[in-house]
Every structure is written in C-alpha cells, then in structure tokens.
Length: 510
Image 1 (cartoon, rainbow, N blue to C red):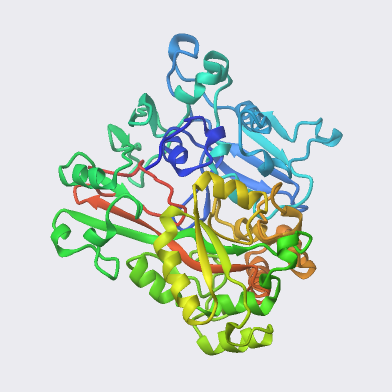
Image 2 (image 1 turned 90 degrees about the horizontal axis):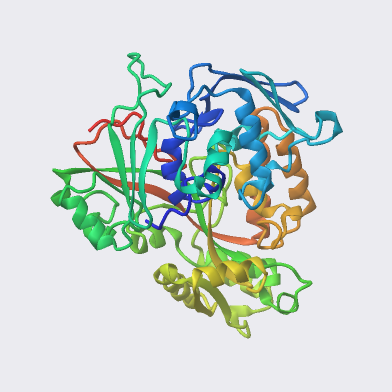
C-alpha cells in the first residue's frame, strides 16, 4: 500500500488517505455496501421539489472525540454550524482538492453568498445553483466529513497529523510511512441491531508495506489480519487461475472479492486542432473500432490478470453500477473478421501502409500491453509500447501530448455521472478529465439531461444511451472492470466489502 499523506478529510483524495479517514470521521450521509445513500449524522434529509435545496435534520447525540483542543479536553456535541464551517473550508484550494465538487453550490446574493446554512443547531441546509442528481452521492465522499473549528484553530496545518472527528475510532499515533494506530471511540453514536454500541474492536493498526512478499509473510506469521488489493500479494502464488484461494491457504484465510467501480482503458486523443492528431490514422472512427475488436479481453483477464476483473465488453461504466446491462449495452469483443473489414474501410487493407502506433503506459501494465500488442500485430495493427514514470504519464496525458495512453478511472461516488463526465465536452483536459477531447453534442445533451433527472429509471436510460454513443464513436478502448480483492484471516468476522473499496471496520469482530 502506498503511504498516507494526510488525515484531514479535506485531503481525502486517494485510497491511502480515505481508509484511515473513514474510521475517524463521519459526514451527513454514508453509503452502504449496495451503494445506497443512508443517513449518518443526519438522521433524515429532504430535497425541495425544484431540486435546489437540501435540508438535513441532524442527530443530537453525536460528539467530537475528546481532545486538548476543547475546553477541559472533552469532546462537544456536533451542531449544524460545524457543517457550515467544515464545508466552507473545502472552497480553499490550499486546504482541499474537492473544490470542483462545489461548483454547483449557490453562493450568490440570494443565499447571502454562503450556500450553506445552519437554521438552528440541528437543521442544516445546502443551496444549489441548479438541480444535480448526483449530489447526494457526492456527499458520501470523505471530503464532506464534519470537523471542529477548535481543532483547526488549535493545530493549524498540523491538523493533518492530529485529526479530531466523530468516527468509530479515535486517533492515537502515526508513524509516517510505517503505520497508523487508532483506538475505540467509547462514545460512538451508531449501534447494532441488538442496540450494542459500535465499534466492537478495541483498536486498529494500519500498516504500509511496499514489498508484497514481506506483507504476505507478515500475514502468514499472524502479524496482519488482512491484505487488500491484487498488488498486495503475489496472485500467481496465492490464487488459482479462476481467482480462488489455493487449497494451501484455505484453512487459515478466506478470500473476499467483489466488483470494483474502476475501469481500466486505453484512451485516444481525438482533437484535430493538434497537429499530430490531424495526421494520425486514429482520427478515423473505423481504425479506433478496429483496435477495439483486435484483442481478446476474456484472455487478457484470465491469463494476464489471473482471473481478477471482468472483461469490459459492455462500454465504459463498470459492473456494479445500476445502468450496467450487457444485454442492452453491447460493447466490443474479439472479432478478426470485423478488424479486417474496418481496416479496408479506413483505406488500409490488411493494415497496408498503416503507420505504427505508440501506446504510453506505466510500468505496472507492461505485461498486459505486450499481450494486446501481440494480438493487434496478428491483426495487422502494429503497436509500440512506451513505458513512462506514472507522474510523467499523468502530466503528459493531462497536457494532451499523447495520442494513445493507458489509464484507469476509479469511481469516487456511486453515480454513473462520475464515469460519464470524462466524455463531456465542457470537461476538456487540462482543466477537466476529458483526456480524449471527445466532443459530441448528442452526448452532451443526454449528459445534461441526466444531471437534472429525478428518477433512477430516467437516469439509467440516459446513461445507457450515452454508452452506446461512446461505443460507436470509440474515443476509448475499455479493457476490464477491476475487482476488489482481499485475503482475510479466519479469526476476523463482520468485515464487509463494497464496490467503492471503502474499508468499514465499525462492525468487525476478532
């Protein structure tokens, strides 16, 4: 696992930060393992009929953790003003990476330039400039946790290493780069169905070990109770070809596996205002479609990924999302005859005179790309692989320097809008996440309708129509939808798993 950089929820932009932050903090709402939005500190919520005002009724039994920042060191009750304070600090780009998520907040004269309002201690309101159907989902992100102003005043910038929240665990110690130790919060507000106060565990120790062989040895030696992610252990050694636990390990451990809201893909830059795109064969839709048909996603997942993941034969939105429907949304599959037909249609019969293409990627994807390269070669599409440092790749893709590039997209919240915003023409990189500079007015129209749609069925229908446009225009080559995978010691029970790969420890017993 990579290292944690901050325990301030305002900086919870990656898994390394999100996992510990999720134990220490709560927000208004939370997401269950089926991606439904449920109450948390807000016991109930309502949305005005015009979709512009969100009203939250807060619980009155939620207290901040005991900490020297408070008078007498005792944690105080959370009130609506704490949410006004916590959310307003997210507008500061020096504090938070969530600023773009707040573009929809109405800070006009109408709302007294605030956008957030404490009506009284237990009623909190949010005002939007226009309806935004994904907004409730966005509020489940850890950025939107409540923090006490006393702690920010007391610790200043060192709040990142001295977090004070309301969560099931309180912060005890952080040895940067090594481990984080958390303790049970004896005053936590959530209870189980038998009315027993959560959490059950007395404490949690989160360790960061870069070397997967060492991490696996520590698991075998009983120092760890769980390893998470296909990068955390040698999958060839531990799993069968069908991504099941090998017999050797089944006595002591169990495997947890579920869909992950993550799509791995090869992106194509389409902007013909850029010289090298204007002269590239990739500007032709038939060539982009030919590449999509020219390799076998099933074999890629089975042999290169050892069965971890689902072949992406159903567009860009991953399995686990409500609109995912292979019967309705038909993507690409391996078909050499289609490749041949499309190459001829594009004016390159049997790949004759088709220039060699270059795919830019990070080193951890080399093996998979070599497999794709070999299959494309058998179908007369020559490809070269250029391996880059992740930071260089990220910067170059953002600056539109590459025509073909390997990336992945992880969902931050449980709404398809999170995946479709990559193709919206107003989100062109480098300002936005449309790395392809894909521009289709039909798509934009459907996307804008989905933003204000009020029913799930209407949204699902719109997302499926968007997917079909993307499949036809082929600005992207979806490879596979990833899976969350964990090896867990059998002495652990109550550990849930979800498509967001969010770690929830409040109901775990050991």
